[in-house]
Length: 569
Image (cartoon, rainbow, N blue to C red):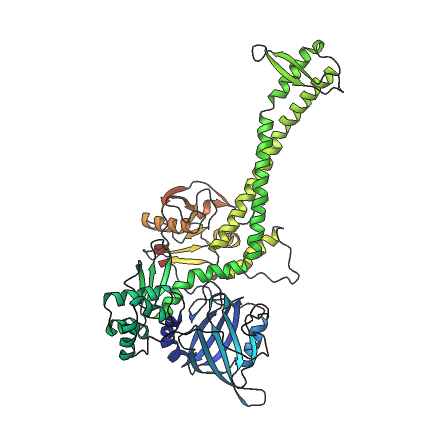
């Protein structure tokens, strides 16, 4: 189910007692559509995420480490001015809709108390976050400013009067009495009742219909709706492995249970962790990915062109043969001829048609074929060298794309720096000082034996991990002949099980992460070297062993140590 009205109702069961009465201490906007509000209450900090993402708008308490950007957007500056230090007085849902109002109390520059509302509208592509004054309903600012010609239903600009969007509420199943249900059921079929209920998405309506078809009574009706007052988090999968989250366990949908959590917020945090990270990475890596895709496209075309040239050069013997046959039969070639047919003594004197330049003498025509032959043969070495360089560059950009796929949002700056230093991106006018790589930047895993594994997520991290951080006796892992992370097992005498688990991690953090059979090389770190002048992330090694593994995401990520990467300020 999505963030429909009943899901929001369930979520507020936990949010209201946790946040109301808390002081809003920090506000930041890590990404275009996302806000993070830090509330302080009872000597604890609560990190509250609000996302107006069109595909999956949401809000929940999160423990994810989300980087605070160096430069605050205008909307955040406004929120800080009006809300920072204010007390959250109440949280109210508009009916069973997807609009939630956060009521704050603060004092202005004159010391007068002002009441402000932060309205969170979780409505697909129309999602927004709007700050307005409760006394006169005038909008102070909003996350997405909408031009009047884009939305004629209401004006969504600063200083305009805040109005609710057009709503078509249905019946509230949470408050519907038994007598009202009996009256309704005497006039309507179960599917009609399901359609009349407010706050339900398609999955919820299907589930409610299942309850009513099993037992068309008020008791069955209330059993369904009572679940929303006692929510838990249930993550389920469709037959096509699409993950969905519910605040109750559905029985009438074709879904397989993956996991559950008594804490709905914690379940939401787990459910959205991967998808949110990928979305944030995509936002930050937009320019980098465009460069990577353009370079890959150009290099692929270049390789095809070079391969055609190589094929032509390697099959250039025909030019030499034509030159020899012309030289052997100059008497039969008359000036001004455009072609001639001569016996090919390499093919049992079968006739060979040879094109001629009528402006050249017979001898000069023969010499032209020899010159073409020599030029093509001499080009083979150059073409092979150009092919090698182009294919190395393709592998390099494959490694950059793999790094983006494995990145956390805060890793994108390092990838951007790398492409600037390699000359693929222009240097920024304001040259940011590159942050020093530390162990906190890496992914860290704990194997079943208790031993630790470190994983680099981009080429700079890979170089630092392999060449500086690792002990020479540690074991180094890398997927065979494919872009992937450098992986270090911090032990000099690993067991077979240690090697298998570390290899699975290396396979997962590579281009082959979705493959069933992945070859992974492993060797002691002292046997890994970086050639002079090699691009970031490129190393050579000798004396390696190999193991074939199948990376299983759930097993691997269960070994990951959480809360390593500290949020920057």
